[in-house]
Length: 140
Image (cartoon, rainbow, N blue to C red):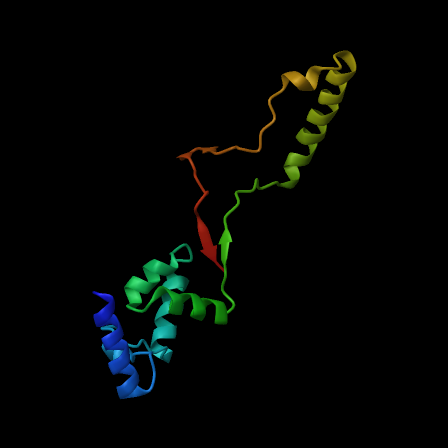
């Protein structure tokens, strides 16, 4: 589009409507209404699958993803990053205390013992294989 045509269109729009802003009918996009049914469908989708993305819900309900985000925010739902935690039970206490005492004994006999031990919080191996929770979010 040349600048001349652009300014002709702007002038025509200003003369016809008194504004440079065009209405939604000129853009080819329909207006999306946040109806109770749409809100219910969004909440149902997240309720069925808390790990679903806002864009997936958007496609399923056929509304813009920003409406999905607004509904979730208004309902107090926020995406939370999943963190794997070790489930400790009372039976774990004694072996942990025993290990801590053993470790302290090793440090007494060999002061640099801890330099030869690999400590990690990246335990991603499970009986089911490697688990990746990097991009996993859940709505609560």
